[in-house]
Length: 115
Image 1 (cartoon, rainbow, N blue to C red):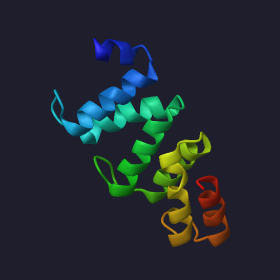
Image 2: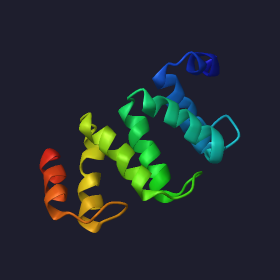
Image 3: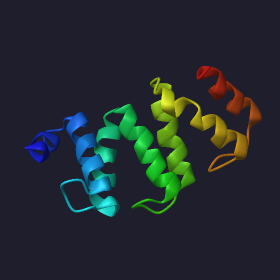
Image 4: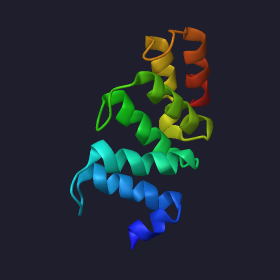
């Protein structure tokens, strides 16, 4: 039933499938294809938690090739929507230069959003 709803384009159902496939909860664990695929479908629709989770997958190389540039792009999308857990992370990324040019001013702006 969840697959059917997700296939119809409902972002929350897609995010739920991403979580199930990433954790192997009730289905075969498949981060390489299924988790990333479903999180990305939801993220493209603007589902902030999926955007943040997809960023983590790219940052850690979990089920995908590690790609900090891609991670930062998804993280910023989530943070710009007000996802509190994502808002402080771009600050660390810009402070340390992970996947982006090191930029203390940009880091400070992201940290201010979270305070």
